[in-house]
Amino acid sequence: MASAESQPRFGQSVKGLLSDKVGSCSGDVIALTRQVLKGSRSQELLGQAARNMVIQEDAILHSEDSLRKMSIITTHLQYHVEHSKNLQDQLRHLLK
Image (tube, rainbow, N blue to C red; front, side, top):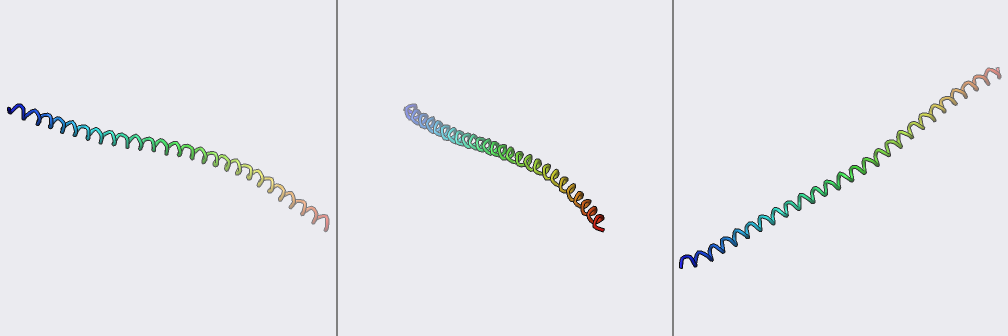
């Protein structure tokens, strides 16, 4: 009769162990899911950072081009200012 009583206890302890294992596995699955979501979010942020970098690079290239054009315009303006000074000097000399 002792063996009849031990079997339900054995069955109950197996069910308890199984229940603990299922709980532990559920916790592991939840932790794994969180890590996957975190990794997915990291990938999303990296992609967004890469897109922002491309936009910034385009803006920098555009700015460099604008500065180059402004430098050319400045050189032309300096030439015209010098040329106008020469013309003013010539006019003054003629008017004397």
